[in-house]
Image: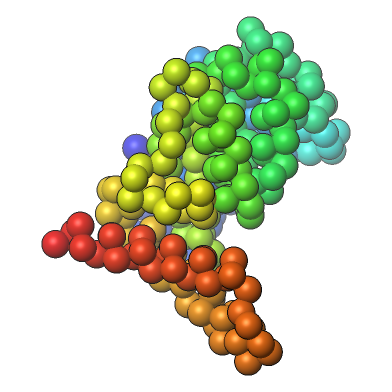
Length: 255
């Protein structure tokens, strides 16, 4: 399944605007990373569209949808009812994994949150999170902080993806707690720097390349502004050097 396959009954040429009921591209990308699981825990489910589509596509058998917002859960309940899926949903009003036990689900989705918040949820709910077969994450920001937490906390990165959605690049990560098989990033990745994922670079994903080029341009503009005010911050210089290194690796390895 590709990212565009996740919206059912779509035409060959997608319209410029999403039709009602269609998922955002970043959520479609999350579905491709999810694969097939038994019970999905949709943490911070919001309106429930992601997990409803996972059920409709046969990617899971049941969903436990949870959110700290009761109104959001009401929307998810209404959607499940309208699709005839209410008997395959369980709804819980809770934050993170607080309302779960280790036997509830075999996979989880944490989408649309900050990367540091996702890391905090995993850490606070480790009794549940560490028993899951797959955790799909889509941070809105803080990708480096989340990736650093995963690498340093015994998680094995199963796959990663990059998605362009409404002009913005999103990084998605699928991981599993597996300290025996977890390891550091590949040797071509800058040591101690976690801004980008290795898998899309190894696949020569053109979206990854475009994201790195945009990121480099933003950092170079920041460098110009900071240089005019004095000595540029070393952290900013490192961001530029590391991004250039990965772009060079991407281009050289393609040839």
